[in-house]
Image (cartoon, helix red, strand yellow):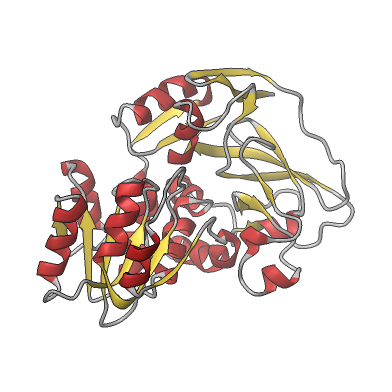
Length: 340
């Protein structure tokens, strides 16, 4: 089969890879209908993470082609959405709702690699969720978004305790940030402030329910949030970038006693301890337990109550994956959908 391999930073190729096969009875083989490039894929592309002939991709939807003898909840022919983290969904951590910390956790990125034609998904019962039927073609991008960015943005909003009567600020206007805007509104937030400098992303943020746009960054961004909230700061803040600047901006924008959800993949982000101490806020985040939210998100998409698929602004065939990486790196695209 064909699959995307990153040889080293900036060197993305589509190569012949070995076809996946059932190894464990809990495995499923999925023929992928759509996959995509994530903002986190840019870390190795830019040389921040190591890349050495790495199988790329961790977001995926498709049709089950084969199952192991121990698989019970999905069957051959089902259209499925999978989480970017493998989980059994039965361990104590999973049952608490944190499947991304499962005792059998395996990250799909760099191991399975779903920017490909097929994928072997371990612990299929705990990782894959079947849709109510075969989806209409126009629903596929939205279902694909549920595999990571929608679930991650949703977790960020939940961790920030977005809800009725609350003001939510979202730091970051990439795919995850935009999905956090959508989630905050769905969770009933009274006001959602999107921090963005890009006109097209601002437009999409408003489509997803943003009530205010703040273009300022850093200390100026924090000051603007406080100006909009009577000097107090937002009740809920989602950090969806992963840099030191965005993290400190998110902490500063959260009112004392407020909640911050951090879901941007970060490297070398050092938070001054005294600044964090003085902030007096609640913080929760990390790899999103997408599997917790998948059944509900799939139903919302199926019922056409939400349209997260609009976050994809460039679609390419799998063979042009290198161009997709370049477009996202140069910020010519927010998120690229790939068709195997």
